[in-house]
Image (cartoon, rainbow, N blue to C red; front, side, top):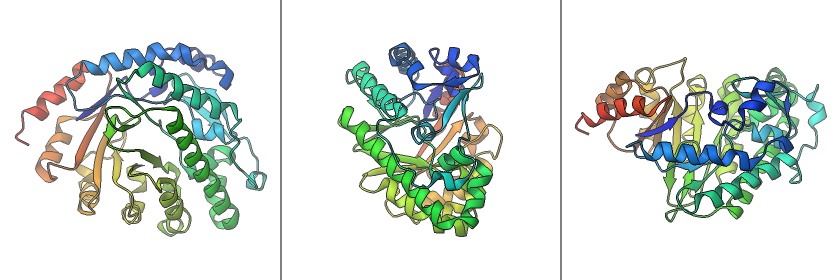
Length: 335
């Protein structure tokens, strides 16, 4: 059982980010002062140390910022409770030749976060990757979500080129992050989910795959998904119920080690997602379940219907008291 405190609006968990959110204008990388964020991380670490859960705190470059989108050219804007991006290209054709520029200030800011968090850690916690939007998400941010979806039909060769460009960029980014961070307790950590791994790990997501058919997933995303985790001993994909039609193909990715299924604030309950949870476990992969509010019926559904091993349960809560209530309920059962 693993907890993350602070609610679902991750950006507002960082006091250093709130002034930029409330300004409701474009956020430029030079306005993000990493040193101002370090007290937030120390507070988060100390708060979670007081919770009797099974997590290893993992710090990551501010989860509230749209790193991949901005690294590839998008602009970020504060919207009071979160940071959003707005399309910067009017046509997919304008994205031809898209490639990573390591001199991009957002890229350098990401690595600055990684270095300074490693220094702050002093071996107490790992430094990992935050939520990094997938290839569909990133192209959707740059040119528009509808344009991304239509491009699958109208511009298949261009979309293949763009998706692979973003895949290559994420691999470069995480390789450079590992170059400036250190192992912790002999291993590393899955950022955002607070899961320790004995060796290096890569995790990814494709939220806008919800706009794709299974045929398009197989044509466009199966190869990029294999590529992004290649060479990493541990790997995880993040998945919402809106993309369950792709789960069978995801499970065919041999090197994929774990699937994280979101228990969204508005959406299916754990009980309603049991068939997909069983699919993951039956495939021999690990299941990370949650990252939303977890209630007692969710615990009952897991206890009564799923194996009692190979599962990590994540929950998001506003306070430690909410976590302790669920932890006590979990401990009351004979696992």
